[in-house]
Picture 1 (cartoon, rainbow, N blue to C red):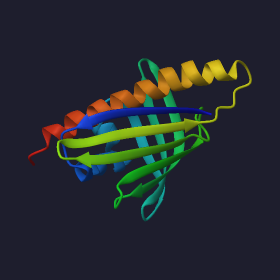
Picture 2 (cartoon, helix red, strand yellow):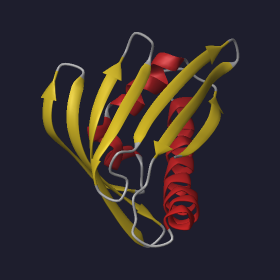
Picture 3 (cartoon, helix red, strand yellow):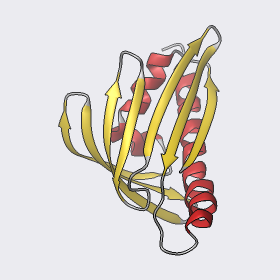
Length: 150
């Protein structure tokens, strides 16, 4: 199993950032690397989403179960299709006096017929997941900090 954490400090309250991050249906409007997010079903704070993004020129697509926890706050994803099927993702928000540390933790047990560990570590995790997560956090930071007073 491969685990990867991407983190950033955002000068905004945790609930403001959580509101942006948990509304995945709006990601294509605010995150330029997201092509689309379709909410396939929803039941309270749980939903099934079909997501598509770009890592450079490469399109990626997956379906995930999303569970929003507004009280903690936290956001949980379990990928159910795509190259990352079986991956668990957790968004964590740790608010302090000077802002919020936001982390995205990806846990992936990859199944690929050839060179599994190399493909998992360098291609899927290192190139695609890391690149998309870093860009997502950078965009969330810019948006949350720009709206810090409003």
